[in-house]
Image 1 (tube, rainbow, N blue to C red):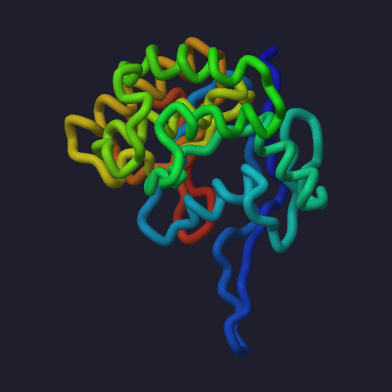
Image 2: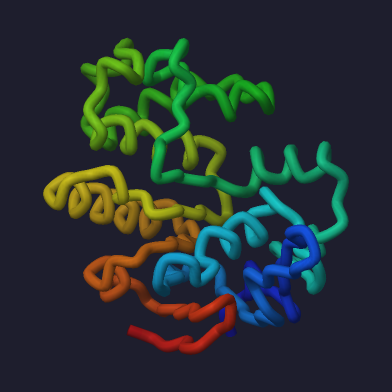
Length: 227
């Protein structure tokens, strides 16, 4: 039986705007197995990004629960959540979010240095070599192409060997050639490191490569199927 790494129970997120309540997600329950590659898809505004931020502890639900690796993270303190995100979760964003004042290897090392990992430099070197960027290790983000920035961001997300990796439209700022290369890299590294990959995208091509597709419509789970 496959272990469950992530579970939601009646998860909901809503905002109040003046006298109106805007519901983004509504009573969403799902489970994700360890080592699984899951795509969350749906039209713009369906709630994909909101769901990722709740699953990863970047935001809190209005109601419902999020259980990660057997621990209910819904009501954890911000300090506890920060440690958990650094040590157990990786996140790859559409906009890269690299630190401009740090070069490629320094950006990758940063999460490992936060946990005082003496192997940070060696791990960063191995990851940079694995993604073909060792010769670019001293380049700053402004000196890298979009595809190179995203490869650095992937390395940074994986340096602490997280049990789960979230990716929010990771190819959204890339051309088709770089997009395909980034998805190839993500799936290869996911298999190599046995990491669970949860990826939000509107791309049907990327969704077709997943082991399972979670489809959202207007904040509700409208389809959950294996590809």
